[in-house]
Length: 139
Image (cartoon, rainbow, N blue to C red; front, side, top):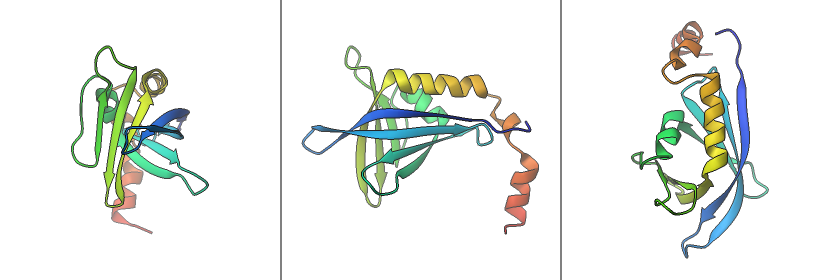
């Protein structure tokens, strides 16, 4: 493909703190068709620069229906009959965080990404020549 398209959305989510109360936060999710396997999520946690994590699109998609992920990122749906939320647990050397993300806006965002780049067709959107050049001749 010769043109990149970006899909983005703002999500209101909740950070679950140790005493199980929640703190509302804003996150921006972004998907670029020239990086079709990845979703960037920027968490706004005050006046500082946002904290950015990169997820596999498939990880978030599967996490809507069942628990998925090993290590640093895990995603799973709320219990059946519970709230319509998805849990995202992040772990880094700087600490751990658990977020509750409302399912409807996350699902709508993911749906828009799959309209732009259907599942199984991601490789068609990667400029292999440019990727090889970046690997072989770094600037």
